[in-house]
Amino acid sequence: MRASMISLALLACKTAAAQSPPPQPLWEFGVFGVGGSQQAYPGSKQQVNPAIALPFLIYRGNVVRAEQGSIGVRALKTPSTEVDIGVSGSFGSAASDDYARRGMPSIGTLVEFGPRLKWDLGEAPGGGRWRVALPLRGVFDINHSFDFRGIAFEPEFGWGSRSGGGWGYGASLSAVLGNARLADTFYGVAPAFATATRPVYEARAGLISTRLAVNLSKRLSTDWRFFGYARVDSVAGAANRDSPLVERTAGGSIGLGLAWTWARSDRSAQE
Image (cartoon, rainbow, N blue to C red; front, top):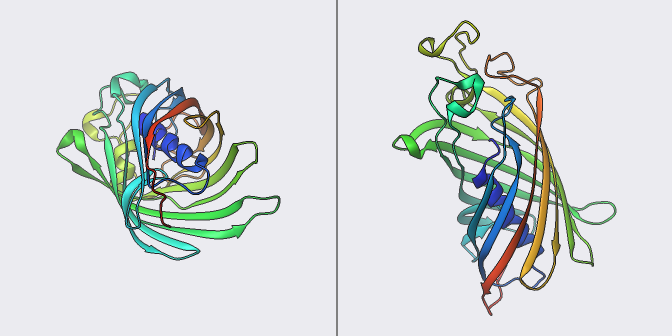
């Protein structure tokens, strides 16, 4: 729902998975590092510059999966569709780091849990494949006793391709929608936190932001991979565009990283 270090971690794991040549190993374990610049949340003027190094695990079991930005259970698999139940998340942001939210409660580390439908639309002109993903997830704040923060739905239309030289490319367009409770987490202003420049605002359910993203990756060797991404988030036409916490219509994020595979299974995954 917002750019964060955990979101970057999931992107890195997804890139690493996409770069593995067939047949893919059942599991891979390694470390990645990524750094970049990103918006604190859609509509914020605040740019943060995260850098993080974390281990990653990819597991491609018939039922349990840990790859492509999610850890969860595959409930259904056909040649063109897949349904899984997954978990993802994002680190929080301190209100003291953002002028618009100063004095308000910080946004905690959020975890998301729920089903996702993935649909392979077939080959795209010029190579690659079209895809659609439809995740619907409940959102919980682990910094506040796992308080329920709302429901998120993020339909995504994407394209991905891989060249013979080891380069991988991708692009996607998505819309982030949330119920009133989730919108309030980012854009609501309660009377206790209103000021002369930050009036009371009751957040509404609906579109939170639209998102256009591109990514690329390159296999440098058997164990090393390079990846990068760029993304633009826009709140034009969003349900809470008039919130005093929205300071600009569009903002960008960019990042670069390296992933190193320390160990992998000799056994291949069975799709």
